[in-house]
Image (cartoon, rainbow over all chains, first blue to last red; front, side):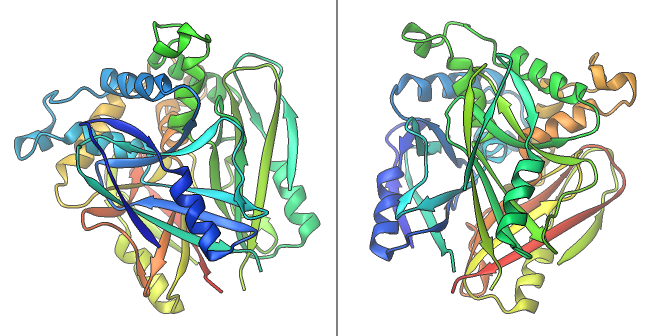
Length: 133
Length: 133
Length: 133
C-alpha cells in the first residue's frame, strides 16, 4: 500500500502516523511488523517526538549546521541538493515498527515522521505490513 | 514482548543483546526477523561494537560535540533535553535484525545497544519476532 | 542467505542492489520484507542515490569532516579505527525494505549500498527474506 503526501516547505518534518495507522486498520493486522519506506533519495522516514513541533525545527537546524546547503559538494556541480541526499542517507529512507493489538506500538511521545529535505513536492510512502503467523 | 532496563547515567550505551536473545529462546524462533524498538523519544537502539566499552564513550562524545546540550534549541524553552530528542531521531528508536538457527545473526563484534540520552531512568524495549514461514 | 563483497578502498560506498535482488529472484519471494544486514561493526548498509557516484564521495567527505579519523578517540589507544565504529553505529548495520511483485520496492533513484569505513577488505552481508502470508 502506498500513499502520497505533499510537503509545503523546502525542509520540513511531517507527522504521518495517522496515515500509516489507517492502512493497518484497513488491512486488519493485529500483530506483526510495519515497514514505512519513502521512495525518494532526498527525504527520510524518522521516529521523533510528537508533542512539540519545535523539535522538528531543532532537528532541521542541527542537520543544516552539520550538513550545510551548497557547501561545495561534488554533486552540486550538476544539481544543488547534495545536502538533501546526504541527510536522507544518514537518517534512512525507511523504518520498521511493531504492531500490537491492531495499533502501532509506539511510545506516548513518538510518531512516524516524513523528513523532507528538497521540497516542496509530493512524496510517495510505501507501507508494507507483515502479520505474525 | 517487552522488557525494561534501567540506565544509571545521563548518557550511556547499554548492551541488551542477551535480553533480546532470551526472548527469542523463550519463543523458539529458529529463523526470521527480530525488531527491537525502544518506546522513548530520547533514547535509541543501535548496533555497535561489543568488545571495547570505550567505543560507546567515543560515540557519546562525538554526538555531544556535534549536537551539544542546551545549545539554544527552541524546545529547550520548555524543557532542557532537545539534544536527546535530536540524537534519538538521528540514531533511530528501533533496529531490525535477522535470526538464524535460533540465534540473532550478528557479527562477532556486534551487539544490540540501548543508547540513553536523557537518563538515568527506566526504559521500555519492545521485541517483535516474525518467524519465517 | 549471505554473500561477500570486497571493498577496494579504505572508505567506499558500493551498490549491492543487484546482489540482493538476485537472492529475492532465486527464492521467488513476490511480496514481503527484505532485511539486508552487514556483519561488521566498521561498515554500514544505507539507502542512497544511485545515479551520481559523487554523492557517495560527498557523503564520505561529510562523515570524515564530522567524525575525523584519529581525532583522539579512547578506542584508538588499542586500534586506529574508532571513526569507523562510530560511523557504523550512526548509519546502521542493516536496512529493511519492501518487496513488491518480486522486486525490491525502491524509488527510481534509490539503491542499497554497503558503506565501507575500514577497508579494503572482504565483507559479509546477510539477506533475510520474509514473504507475506
